[in-house]
Image (cartoon, rainbow, N blue to C red; front, side, top):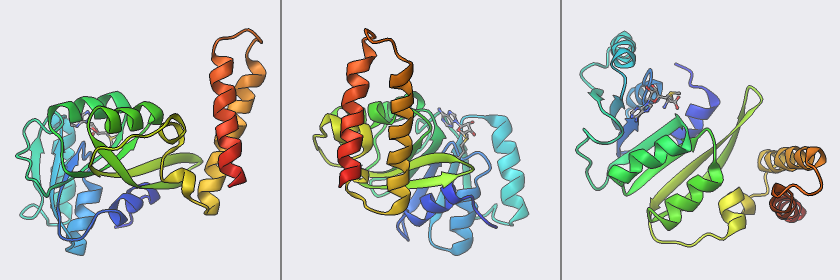
Length: 217
Ligand SMILES: C[S@@+](CC[C@H](N)C(=O)[O-])C[C@H]1O[C@@H](n2cnc3c(N)ncnc32)[C@H](O)[C@@H]1O
């Protein structure tokens, strides 16, 4: 089975040997891949009964029904979370992710949100007590995804770090650079369309100056 680039990057960021709780597993492709490789024990969970029915068929196709446990759960509510479990929450929006983590907080996890990365980083650090220990950019079908690995540790991130990622802003590889160039181009386009007295202008100008600094290295 070949995973998408996004899911493959997530799989590569998961340490061997940990029990993985895949929240919002959809077809459980990540869990199937990890289990086939024999690197992790997985629990595939989803809020949606119909999704889980299809997940079961998928897992059955790979003859892994005895290896991957499926649990219907809204977030982590039905999961008996153990201290060294590794949680994955990917492909959802920031508000859903934050709501899920309000309930229970794992010690280590991977998060991939589809929106509002600034709010996500700010609340995960300042409110929920997580520190970002790795961030990876993935470009797939012309969409940039940011994948974050976190652990429980109190840390303070400044505005620039919340906006663009405390680890990402230190990376020098061409994909990360392209991502920041793409953000800069988008912000410049927005500024060009905003009336001169628009309140958002100042905030975006600051973001542009952060991006220019990051790209200057
Ligand atoms: C777009 S899919 C992402 C699937 C997979 N995690 C990935 O990254 O490719 C989102 C999945 O999350 C599930 N979901 C949404 N809200 C949820 C919640 N509160 N708890 C558990 N699963 C949820 C949906 O049913 C859906 O299957």
